[in-house]
Image (tube, rainbow, N blue to C red):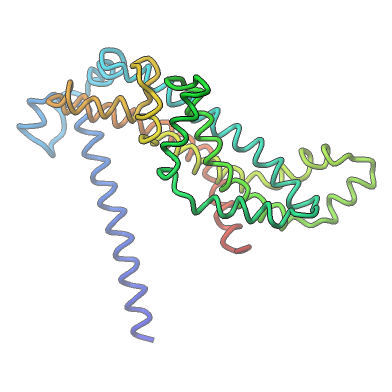
Length: 275
């Protein structure tokens, strides 16, 4: 018993330590984003003399963070939206309308989870060149949608299978078509799972760097990870500017988590119970 409590205590100490370290680093970056280089070097852990938004304005305009921000937002938004729409429809067919081969189809998507994105980098690159889609946001949207599809099917099929069939059967007996049953019964009951999937896919697409660095060439279509990578050269000495760019990058993810926090927690809790 003592050994069990000791293991649990070590786990909590590790988790609280990791959370405290992450919070301290975030706080330092946030405070440094309001400082000048002189203030950062003179007092790295102190408060700024005056809280000015100059670094944010410069990062948004002069360093083109604003343009990169909207590029990332468009690519991530449409990638997640397409993944949810087509993933939900496919998961509904597999989970609620079983057919010959549906189990094999679900297994095929499950296997897709084990395929690393990096292993398909070269064939994806060649295919985008052949389609004439390289150096466009459409290429990133397609990549984010395709690679998010297996996870969407894997999660939503299990979630939809847990919904009682009696609810759907009663609706069909009342004259509801399968399509109406899908978007009036299945989709509302699957919102927690879809919210969890959306935040995971959005974070993955928002922070994705490898495919963006290969498929995007011109500065016009660069995403935020590519733009921040350029800071190492042109703005390597502007540490306050770099910190401001990092904070701007974090804002959408934090907002999305705050808005969908309840649904995300419900989805994770439901997934843990339904196993």
